[in-house]
Image (cartoon, rainbow, N blue to C red):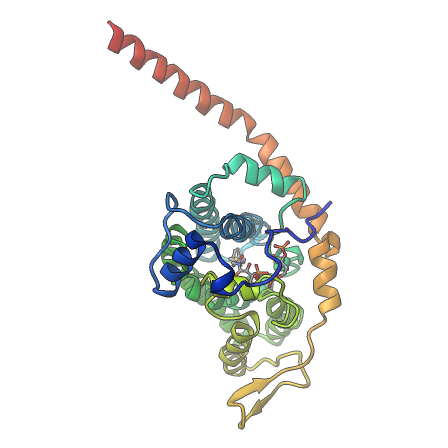
Length: 332
Ligand code: FAQ
């Protein structure tokens, strides 16, 4: 039903002396911060790693439209509705840039979509949680887009040119998304007691899953060492998670709501917040397909793809007719 670990063929990071001359030249370019472009030679495992990560990222954007799309018809004001519609459309756009970036590596969008629908590809764990109240839309913008930006800013400097360039625009848009979410939280936090309670409840439910978005701890992360050597990953899962916590705790204080973590406290020695243990069993359960909404999300995506079949067929038929007309005109 849902993806298991993707084997990119990397067992351990190899020393330069163990690499072929081609691999050594490739690694030297990476070390010199030269971007790798699609038509250049690259190790198969580098290509597979990027296809895995970029396609998962694209799927996350597309599946990520669903929890928020669920609230477009119920947004509390016309302005909030217009903003939410624009945000959800932006996420669709991000998916398209990312599918295009992955296509430069030789995989077709149809193949990537088929992999998602067949459960062979992952998407972010966070989108398997339900949006129960309007405050969840605030929490997603504030926390989920906030975590996404924290992870994606370093990706703007990653070694693969098309991915790095796609990230620049995506990050600009995500920062607006984060601010619209925080603005919703601020309105609720300054509202009635009931509204403030709604904001607190959304924080309680979204905080821990947001921390899981950064992936397993560095000690458990199977791909990190090689991805760091290839400068696909600039900062580790744990480093990014810590930065996110440090950035977000003062924002919750400003809202006047409380992080659902009794172990959260400032550590002056480390100059960081200490935080409680993440429930990794929950994370593993969600990425294996058993989160609250996994089945529903996939079912909805598959149905949307099937329902849109006639549009793709019509576009193809139109393109074929145009090509045939152009050929007939050229021959006349
Ligand atoms: N969910 O060895 P690592 C967004 C998997 S965009 C599910 O550490 P890696 C915008 C991982 O794939 C959010 N699976 O892996 C938005 C691997 O399994 P595999 C998406 C996860 O790749 C906002 C295994 O665990 N962002 O939110 C997760 O080096 C609002 C071992 O992990 C991106 O995709 C997870 N959270 O590091 C949209 C950013 N974490 O592939 C709508 C790009 C780990 O072997 C509304 N991706 N796994 O089967 C990355 O930076 C990396 O892929 C990580 C994981 C950091 C996510």
